[in-house]
Image (cartoon, rainbow, N blue to C red; front, side):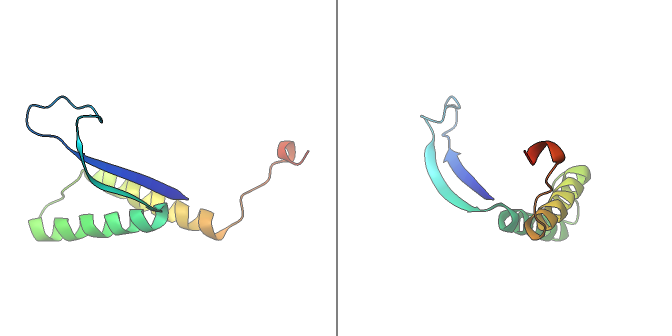
Length: 85
């Protein structure tokens, strides 16, 4: 599963329209790898700052999503009787 990121920079006072922003990063990468790296970086920032940098629930939800993605990557998708034809 892939994720595409397109990060734009807007000058102060510019209307937020993708046509008016300047591209600073555009990439495509594996979703699970990206999520793990983000989780790690958020943990590092929390350690450096001495307090959570994102809401605790969001951090926990990201961790749970990583676990689900790892299981989905490892296991074959379930087939349901209605899909078997």
